[in-house]
Image (cartoon, rainbow, N blue to C red; front, side, top):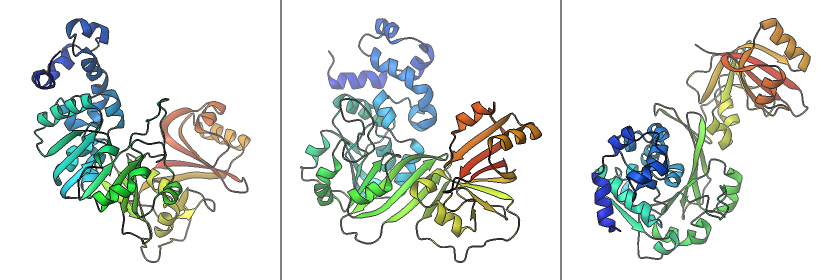
Length: 397
């Protein structure tokens, strides 16, 4: 059995790039015969690298090592880089080191990163990765977060991306109460260590629940990547007693960032009179943050139904956080009317979205024999009185 240092040196020397090319498609059992001591780790690289290249392009281009659990829980490089633009200072402590993607990004903005994780084997791999990336200002510590915070430490920022699969069942939790470390139990100590505590939480966590469960929230950011909510950031400041700032953040595939903060007014909204020719669907982050209605009103958009999350406009919505379309038709929905519409227009393929509607997209496709995709977009919704509406749109060129 090799020592930790020998193990690290062997993996540093190992030509992972050639391995991925030469051994692609081999099973763990086949690899065991060739690499008896490292076959499990190498099998994980073969399985993870094809999907990791898009999520972690810099990490994989330097042929760093992954494990299944650490990869699944890791931030994408795009989201890690965004978080790093928000803070800087002398020292940051990350109590949930994991694969270290956030640490790598933070290392460019802080003089020192202290990264804590209880998994000693993972920590060895992470130290190898940091050497491959030539990063020298991250100190990796093997310890449980609850024990580490009892040390005499301080930082400008304390960051936690708690393990949300901490129980024996392995089921993903979306609350603070079932995470590891238990943030609520150590929160008072965290405030003693740093004036700012940043929590990365599940995209499924409820904003109202956060307001009830945490004190001293300064800011909540709902962050989406390519219009899919990926994480929710909660910034705590022990001395903060004012209103909570809520923000929706959209990051495109090419890294372009758009943000909207609660309470921001553009002055008198420009409601253009005339035929409602355009349709607008707010971004996922606006909807999750509860800011869609405020944002739409500030940009002169009108509700399809009172309280709806679909909007229309007489003027083309440009540069907004969401998807804009030209309206082809907008009609009350009944099964017979919709069937006739499909027959008249000879449409057999469409992209389907539903909000507050009795049927799901897959049910509509099945019931009306529609293929998915194409140039046509169908939106279905209903109001509190169960008045149902169908909107046929096409993307603005």
